Length: 344
Image (cartoon, rainbow, N blue to C red; front, side, top):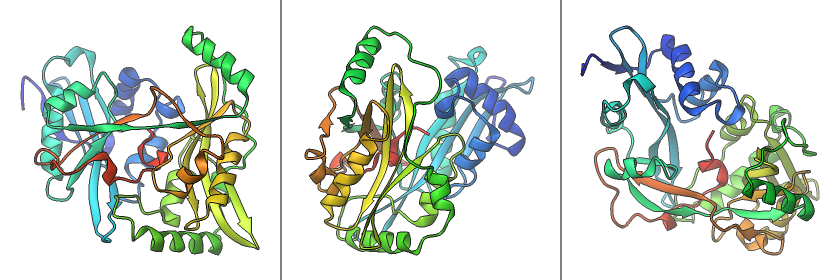
């Protein structure tokens, strides 16, 4: 209890009210509409386990606040799994702001996961970052985004419109790549071979990374309701040597293909370059992705026409459930794909 509020675990019957609160506070999210189907996919069906969540309930039964942590797992070069959580989907009802609900929900949820997770990470925006820093998070740096302009005239026109804050066209942009859901629905032994070869090579990389399994990819890019992920592949001699996943989206007046995942055989820069060019040629004004240092994509990025975009990217902040992040932990300890960090 506290100030007429009861704090308890999120229950299935709370979901409709929680979705209403999230919509009122954060709009429709990445799909434009917060549905129970999307909530279940994100928080109930994930490969790393169901999301722990807490709510603050007012005396009249209204949900005054909600806080959810998305479970995640990283793998280090020593093969050790690092269990983590990512704070997401947080909202406080306007009638109850200024009563410490955000802090109370956060501290109680941190205590709840302290026995099972060793890392808490997220990508707060400029408005929310100061609050996280006051609660013990440490800012590790900015994860940069690289762009590959596909239609220079349209891109320049859209960029000028964005600077002038003119609205963009309605509806999703055109995309020529096939659906990821359809491609992932048909099991392909070649994908399993590619992922196994990739995993063996990644075992020598000491940086934390998400293990790409067929099950993870099917959840992340095949089953996501309303996110319209697409797939690009590269074959050589009948073998699958590269695959990439991303989605077309509106960035104001610009049509962007967000390249979330790129997987190639170890050392295959040619396949990485072909996938980067396929993303840029998907039909949008530009492609955006993260080129993690030391990867085949980073090596092929410049030749594929990718350039680091100024004043873009996501700030990574982190802590442990019980206190500050160890001082030796830095941004260089991770090997990200954009799919690890994009808000979904």
